[in-house]
Image (cartoon, rainbow, N blue to C red; front, top):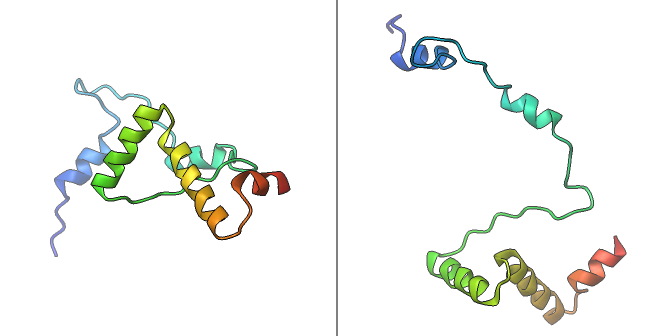
Length: 98
């Protein structure tokens, strides 16, 4: 193995300098920012990633536009429909229990 430094490593070390060579203020590490951020999820909505085929996403986006509702609202309507069809409590009923 060679002891040569990677050119990318030097670029990362000098990332805090602008084009004129002046050092600019560095930002806090991501871990510090995340640790300092308050937990906003308690008692509220929980994010849920959803992967849809492109055609389905486009159709949902178009429906969202025409009905003037967010895609999240439409998806919650769908979840509520599934719950009702399976004899489960609705979203509203579940929220009242909490």
